[in-house]
Amino acid sequence: MATKVILITGALTGIGRAVALAFAREGNAQIQLASEIHALGAEAEFIYADVRNEDDAVERFGRLDVAVNNAGTEGSPEPIVNQTEDSYRSMFESNVLGTVLSLKHEVRVMTTQGRGSIITISSTFGHKPFAGASIYVASKHAVEGLTLSVALEAAASGVRVNVVAPGPIQTGMLDRFLGGSEENKAGVASTVPLKRVGTVEEIASTVLFFVSDSASFITGGVLSVDGGVSSA
Image 1 (spheres, helix red, strand yellow):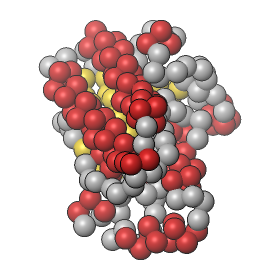
Image 2: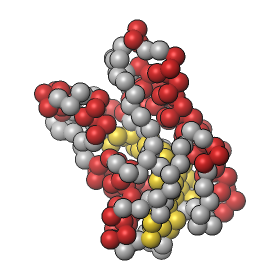
Image 3: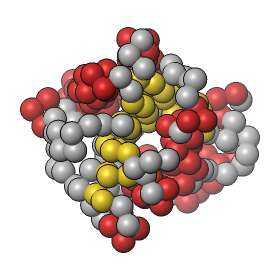
Image 4: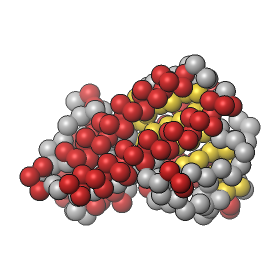
């Protein structure tokens, strides 16, 4: 593909970092973060921004070809009786409001261009329940419904909007979610039909597919990358 301008939120660690490096290796990116990407020969710039704050919207390269909305938090996985207004507010501001504001400005730019591809990173919990993580689950359900509705709004302008929904992936977030316990991780892996957790590279390759010409007729889709958990 020709060089593209790509925005990735939450790109310093985990899935976001893997996606950024995958784009750089493909030779497609002027990406808004800076780390090893320069060593791979792609132009990159890191911009500190809070996705919850509309005033932090940044225009740098004059156009936007691809956006990957990855920023979010797992919060504190606790039963509902232990949740507070503050824990709810923090979760929804990061996961939902952050996605709302990202989509708002991405769609604004892309509809003017008449082209573009947006991927929101959700979770298996965006369409399945999970005991002990009700607020997180609710936020990811909201993110999926939001993104799919925006897909319908943007379609007539030639902008594609899709969701990638990872299952258990080896990241710092998963370690925090499971309390850093290898025993807990093994227990989670045993519930996955493929009997393992996934890798960030597997999510990154899925994102690359979604923004490629091979997926040019796909919009409003949710692709679960979870080893079969969604079907179990």
